[in-house]
Length: 317
Image (cartoon, rainbow, N blue to C red; front, side, top):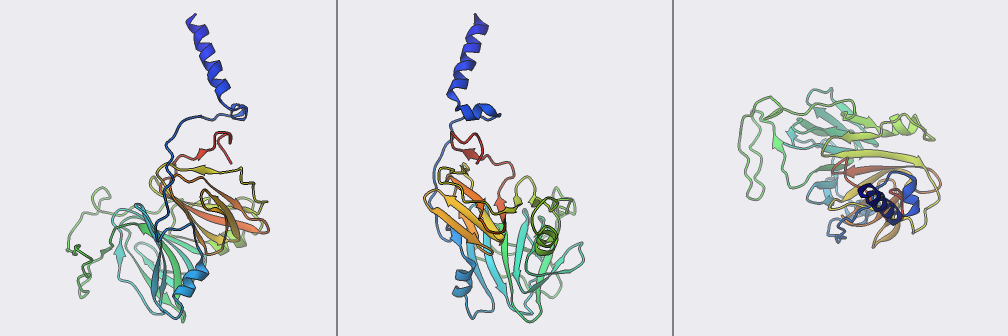
């Protein structure tokens, strides 16, 4: 009798799952959903032409684009000849997408290299680096780092003490070379110093296919996925996509166009150089806009965060 009752319970549970969901392995569950409002500087789409128009005539400037509990992303322009001191961030990666001019990167353990438009560059936590603009034009790049953290400066004789920021003062310290208490995370087969996206992806795979890296950043706390494909007809609004519980997401478009349907916002099309951001708890859907090859670079705080699809979507979009 106990087995009969158990079988009956399973049968009733299956009937409660939409027929489409029974075709493949999916789970049905109740999850908390709270659609977080947009708060400046975060907005659904930041169009690069608008940012450039705002700073017209300025050689050096910064523009906040994303600022959350996890990330701080900015458009940054530096004048020819401008360079930074050698710095690092203590406990997280820094990522750049170079979009204009020439930037010479000096990264500890790597030969200096010049990054031009389309280069993706990253430094792991505690990896010392400096930037220098070379050539006769300003350098424009998109920088993503951990929010509410200040850089640490490498000590060099003759350089001044870094200026205090608010109530945070800089103090000279020592730390051991071991990773557990001091040293830096190394590069690996996925997390490499740079990728020339225009040369190593677009030029090599002009019509798609396979072979380019699927990730530029992938560790337990960060992911930058390279999502690329030929444009397709824009899906109907009944395809709502998915949402994340307590986690936001943003995308940089380096190639073509991407269609986004965002709950409470509607359908928008992002062009190359644009940035799209979605707050936690909002259904959103990204699709390759018709007419050309399209790429979006997806920034996530975790490579394993749950994608919650609509009840009738069979766990996919």
